[in-house]
Length: 218
Image (cartoon, rainbow, N blue to C red; front, side):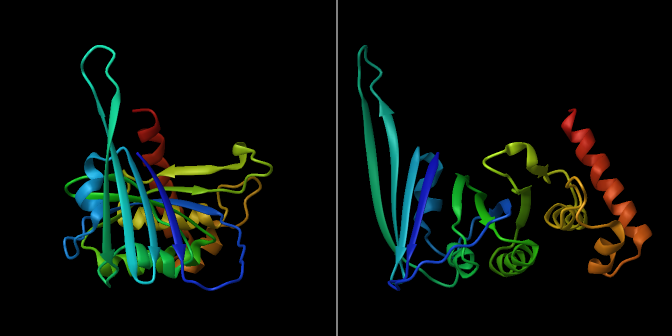
């Protein structure tokens, strides 16, 4: 399933900002608002969304194959217009100047991906999202420092097996450049940011790395 997100506020002027972090969240379905993505996205092959002037316009496309020999593919298009409210997820991402991309929708959860400039934006975004949903999980985090498209400089962590404390530790380590070569921060500096001892931070990192290593070979 693919998704395209466009946002417009009617103001002129261009801005450009480097995005260093790629994140993937899993959020519990809101339930408080009739989000068309949650309603129609479960069986959609493609989703196109555009928000403007306080309204969310959504089109979902679902392909139906004709099972007869030589049959063609019919596409069902659903269009919906919904008022954006305080219970909606997407405006929270817009507040941090990033575009939410919904990649998976189930009865229980919505998976959203986004690019962010740094760890401070990530931490603040997580805090705001937790106020809007009962269940929030940071599933994947990638630090993107590629040069001319060189993916060898990318560090990716699958955080699905970690506890919340371990996810916080892993997110800080990746976004701060702890796993870069050469390292851009130290265990002591990470510990100071979390206001814990260097020994405690070292133990956290060891736990994170042990779980991630085990998960990689399952």
